[in-house]
Image (cartoon, rainbow, N blue to C red; front, side, top):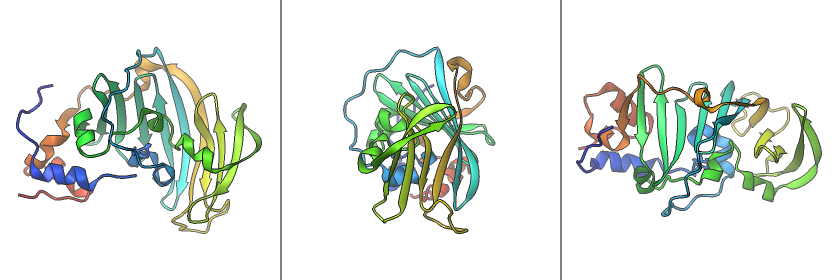
Length: 257
């Protein structure tokens, strides 16, 4: 895809700065926004990456983990697909998030199925916005380093697999429960807040693993054929495009001249 040679519009730069978050994700920074509030709240802020990590050879297989997510907004599904060089999050009501390792770092692609549009963040865009994640953060919806702040509390079973159980409290004093699958590097169960929350409890967040399997990597990720791809840095110059305007507004910024 041809990238525009013009410099990013001032509005796009302001959007980038305004959206800096804690992926973790993980988002990312992580968290990823798609990884959920719990991941973002418990992940340590990531420094802007300046050195690209080595790109792993593509895998023939991918790991697919399906969760049921519950919080104040209700119940919905969260799916993680992970291979050596790609990580994808699919959450009901949110755009698909696809991350790739590249020779220059990590790229991000947001897929909007209803509009058949996608927004591409090159590694340089993520660095400029201060949103370059660590690959290890992206690999799980819950930052693995959270375990260092919790106490080991025996073992558990999840989907027939052995898990390590942890307990502790958040900085706000809310109880945390975690069951961790060490071999997969994923939570089998995670909860922040009481086991029986009151209706509308904004601090409650729960992830429960319901499926874990190895699948063919070639068909495991969302197909992007047919999507019209837009470079993130071009959005600020697309004030007549309804999709671009809605994207910027949804992320807290309208078009500015």
